[in-house]
Image 1: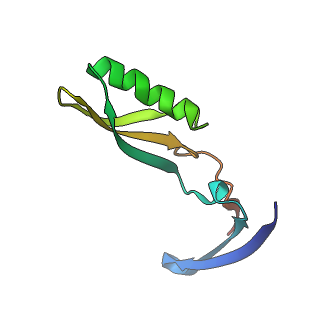
Image 2 (image 1 turned 90 degrees about the vertical axis):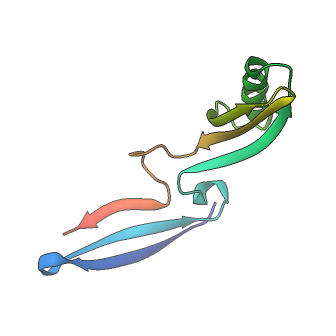
Length: 102
């Protein structure tokens, strides 16, 4: 994997200057800022079956465990939105090398 580094400098209130390095990764997955959302309609008999199928779909897509952010069962199936967090809040982001210099 090729990694390119870019230095960013910002001046904030009081004239304090901060700089940090942003690393750009040459893979699409490493460039995702936080999560991937998938919205779909699953044909199922019950809401419980729809939830089970949604979680299985995440595993079949090699996403591992996914979170169900929205679900709506209408009697024929379930509309849902699944989310796979690549970076959860507060994680060490690959696209940001956190070397802050004050």
